[in-house]
Amino acid sequence: MQYLLSFSAQEFVNFRELEVRSLLELNGLDQDCIADDVDWNEPYILVNCQNDEQAHKLIERSVLIKSVYSIWAQASTFEKLLNKIDLVPKKLMEPFISGPAPIKVNVTSVNKKTSQEDRLDYINRLLGTHKDITAPVSLKSPEYELYLLFDYTRSLTNQKDQKLKRVFYGRLVGESSRRRLMSKFDLSKRTYLGNTTMDVRLAGIIANACLARRGDLVWDPFLGTGGMVLATSVWGAYGAGCDIDYALVHGKGRSPKAGQGKRMEGECLRANYRQYGLEPYYLDVIIADAATLGRLLRVPEERLLLATAIPTAADANQSPEQKQEPQVPSVGLFDAIITDPPYGVRERSCRIAGKAAEREPTFVTPEFLEEITGGAHHPVVVNQDGLVPVTHDLPHFPHKEVYPLQESFSNLLTISVRLLKPHGRLVFWVPIDRNTYKGPESLPSHPRLKLITVCEQALNNRVSRFLMVMEKLPLCAADFELTSVRSTAADDTSTESWGKGVPFHLDNFRNAYFKPKKPQSG
Image (tube, rainbow, N blue to C red):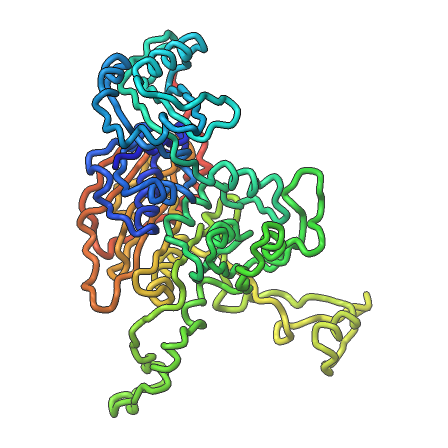
């Protein structure tokens, strides 16, 4: 049976195909139920489903789809549509228009407003074509709602020059959770918030793109305030992550909310989970540096394989510097990894420095020295101001250094290959300078990660960011050759061949973002 998906205006158009195809996979439906030549820029698309229950379940967790309709007839004009109604099989319509259940007829249009007078005319002419209609009409509490959906072209001028492209007639099957979720998870009502908290709609799209299901483990290595993992927990996934910023994770410092000042006690990601009744799905958050995470973490199967690895005679003759860890197959731990690495714009990109910085000793009071050393005995030489010099052999927080974007994305791909389960998805954002962007070959890639799709979100006329969706290949699969991939770029740039192992340059993204606009000549 044919069903019609109705999208929400012109909202995140480039992400429509990603979300719909992800929803198809989540519900175990064939991707062929949508035509290959479908235009995703259109407000309506047709999909084939077996029944109403399957169609409603398809859109239940959608962010971009408003509603789904069972289509009875469609035509290029309203007059042609009326002529087709007699050809509609009676078993399709009679249960809804010939029974005792009350009905309501609605008229909606895209790109053009329909006057109340025209709406009544359309409804009366439509009902006049039904010869056997016996269902009563109820405008307040109908059992079934019938819809006339008019699709017009966009206006090219300020005048009313829209033309009717097609009109559909059918029955409303159901609406998505979009409106309820956007209201419930509105950022203005959220307890724990940050400057870079992900938009509620984009977080919902990412939750669908990573195929978050009940019982999944989802990890964010650049967690921030955890808006994305929180969205996956709405659908039963366990959210976890890490971040290098101690103050942010523990809710210290000033709040981004206007007029609040300092953050309140207990303002953290767990508080958000508790606010929305999702605390059972809160796994954990750790303070960690994503740059070294790959060297520190071991999945359980890796520990077992490393423990049983037998050294060879050649290994015995190697120096400690030459010895390497045994190469073991990566079976993974997480079902999905989703993240938005810092670009150095609103949040700086940093990591723990590998070497200690050469700095002058810090002068503190003897009482503070005793506190930071835990009461350990150290020689104390008090200067004339009553302060003690603290050298760097005492306990201290390691200092941070700039984390180049090129290295951060390279490390992200490497750790994802190790920590993702086979067929697990990696979903992450990549910023680009549109003036120097050379095509998909300049985006990060890995031979063990299959690229599913790339969606572009234009931030301004110079800068964009891509949402990349990758899937970890199973051990038995050959390396992924980046030859062709589905791309939905804002400028409709076609995707050419991808180069394997190409360099990825993003070191100057911050400079490109803040680059002043060129003055207009003349």
